[in-house]
Length: 199
Image (cartoon, rainbow, N blue to C red; front, side):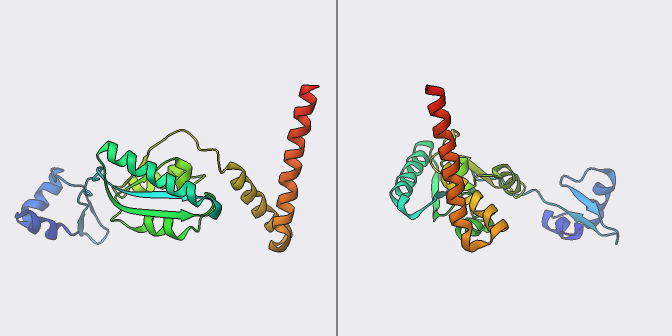
């Protein structure tokens, strides 16, 4: 906002605010634009850490029961920590999928000040730190209930990565079959290595 608007909100004259700015005594960050106008950057509202929105995710529809249990665990965690639930978002989709609509909507909603997830990879398989940094820059935060890694969906995510690579190389039609063959080849190699170790 302009320095004049900020000064009016504070109940002081523009001249006083201008003098404070010139003396480096303005209590909020401000900068002078090339046009000469002084723009004040009021501090963001502090994060209300006791108000949270739950985000729960599983990779496939056959894990719906796991999704319900995940929500129950998060609700119990919130209750034990004295957190107030203001919303719940449940989603089915790969942790590698950057187009999850419900997550995008949640991240775009500045009313969701704090997001509660069970594990980091429930939010995203890669790039958690980028999302967290972007939210922090908005005065928002993420609470991870359990910092240990959840490995249940790693094979599903691996298949998604291989499928995506095969689609880039061979086209979408045969990508899933080629990905399946690649995963089977990796599994067979691991089995053979296990047999050789046991010999």
